[in-house]
Length: 444
Image 1 (tube, helix red, strand yellow):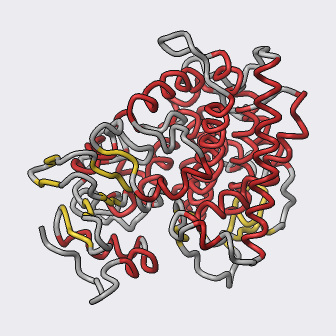
Image 2 (cartoon, helix red, strand yellow):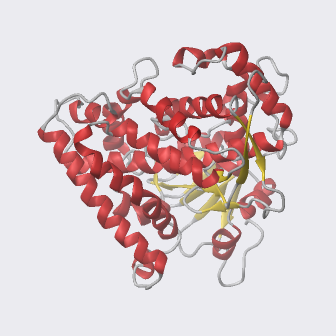
């Protein structure tokens, strides 16, 4: 296999991956379907082939287990769906998945819509809103609402909302730097992380204890998980519930929030897309709030969401570790090899997505001659690793767009710094300052 360009004589590719990050993966994408990376003694490979990446990332963990990235953060985030492998992952997924049923979700859809409306209605005409931070905060609120709706845990839920952002930021740093080194640095960010971690753990333990000792169905995800039983009739332990809740808080708050911020950024840059969205909302919704029944009719909205997830896919880097010697796509990998891939870089591959840097929702239009093949598009992962909350993420994005755009036009603030892609645990935006302008009544 060829060696990727950009390595250094002694440090190999570590500086490129640590410093250049997504830019490195995009630069070497065309150098071959599989490239060898010099990352120390561990055999390490970068996979640039879409179908190979799907096979590797979609494996249950029997052949391709979670890689080095996850081993660094697992002591902090636990062994939930986002980091577990093998038979345990399959057991947990079967117990978690019913809560995210599209037909009968285990959370209150109306409560999610209410949360979106409350935040949007708090905006004042002419105000400047950082949509990157605003959508992160909104997504954080929504996943909390979906997870625990009992009024008996309101104070602990507020604590989680107040601490999760600092916790996630600290985990992001520790995903690329060994935590035993970071923890010793007396920096303000490190102190915020430790304080957030301790408060978060205490609040999670309190909530889970209440739900387990009083297993009333609160019509939320945690109630569903407390009631779930595996094939042997066993329920989840308090620790397993903690890990799954924390996994959902990170994925539901960080990933969904970043994606929503990017969606509003792209729409603000493309007036035609904004106009077509407003026209679709006016035709389908006729001035009322969206419901789940409307989602199938919001065709262009789905195209905008897909294009946002393609162009700004949060998964800038993912890793797997081979558990045995294996051959994929004609390439042989030894046991205990680290396999890296970047879904963001793959979703910008010009051989699959013509003019990949252009935001073009029409590439997803039904019957479009260049519509990407479904197996090439993996914003929520693949196979048994497909994100359990995919349907909820798509629903909340559609509801947010349908709530904001008929009410407001969001315009980028003139003279603002150019937006940067910030690659930590997942990819977000540096800042997205926008001015809120009300849409005149009756104008689409």
